Length: 311
Image (cartoon, rainbow, N blue to C red; front, side, top):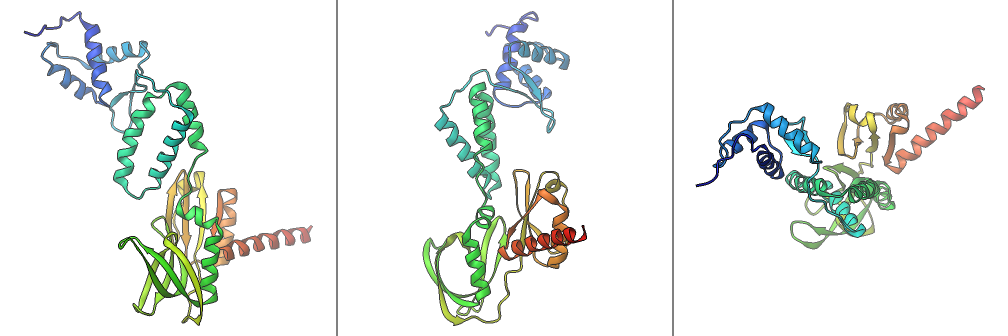
């Protein structure tokens, strides 16, 4: 027959509470229920008693914290510390950044739960190094990377030139390379991805070709039909402005992470848009198109010239 703990065996009861918290976050009610269901414990616990046990754990260096999101209690740090080598910390940072870029919400949630357990076990030195590496290893999203590369400028030029293209394209569904003869229309931004919108005479419909999956482009001498020239202005907002910004007509969010907001504006008059973006100061940056960047810079230069003239 198992031994029944006496009321003065509080030290053992503290260890039972620690065992529960090691399994994950738990509410006061959860902890009380688990303790009452143990065969070797006969007391029914009061909330005040459990808080005394939490205080005892705090004195042992096992800090118990209450989460505001769900009022559950958990250990701020686990009793077993993990030390990682610099290359292992770097690998963890890279993995975390790639998962953040994933469009799969379930994958993000699952990984974050695992990552939280790992972070709670890191030694002070490893944790400090990890945070420093993580802040310097942010991986650019598809849109950020393309907007800062010459590749996007090439596709803008294709749309403006208005000539047919022979495109070698890696199909995600068929897992093979297909050849399309298309008429380029515009560069568009949707679901954190960048596409070439093009008309296919064979299919008699528009196609959205993921730019990252285009492996080769040959410009053909034939002229395309009437073109819809690249008209999107993509800009990035950060800090407080990103958190409080309200979308205007014709705008949509194409990416949101790391405290930044990337927005595509397709309809607003460019002069009105540029003047509005100018008010946002250093918290705003135009990412696309190169034409918009040039026009915006010319507008600023003109304003500076007029101000100097007024002096």
